Length: 262
Image (tube, rainbow, N blue to C red; front, side, top):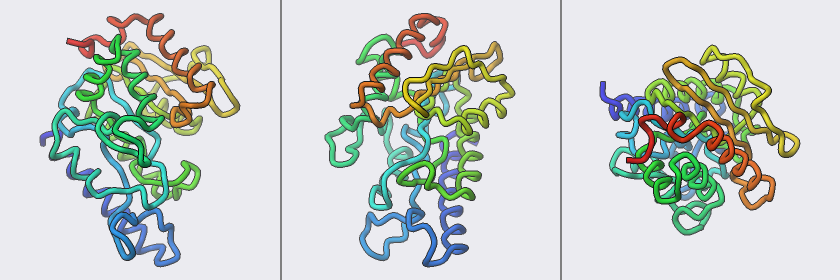
């Protein structure tokens, strides 16, 4: 099965899980499972699986970017977000979409994602090209205003889908735009890696940079950067700067391997 076909199946799975959850909860259920994009009565399942073209998942051994889960209330959903990864090439939600009424690529989270990609690729323009060719999505595809508001049942299913994305991409470098302790522990357990507290660094309470590495096949490096959607907070600048220093310490060639800019 091609990557595009496999991801299309995952897309349909997300829809089914939203529908099942809605049926179980009924009218009193979490309204965030459904989008309000089409106005009253709209029943578009409210999730976001991919932030890149489906074709990027054919590029094994590169860099992968994963968010926690889509944020915003139920009006933030847009059915086109389900379609664009399958219909557009050289597409990155971090570069090509308008979030929260901002111009394309100008939302704080999008700006931070480009800074992180530029640190890996060695420059801003190379960072844009890296985002365009790198698989990207969410660790959990289901939307909630805040991660803690995500229904536990959907979180469990969502993490399984996130693991399928990672397994499909087989990245050399995995960058998480989240450093939640429980989800970091879950990922390390899935990878069968030990925790490495020596590579952790706190910037604010509950804002902890995490990192781990392995000599195995994939991934070789995993980075978890917290709170990048708060980019205008001075602490976030320090988080990105710390990541840039870590990339320099590791070395671009060693980090990127085949993901180095052409």
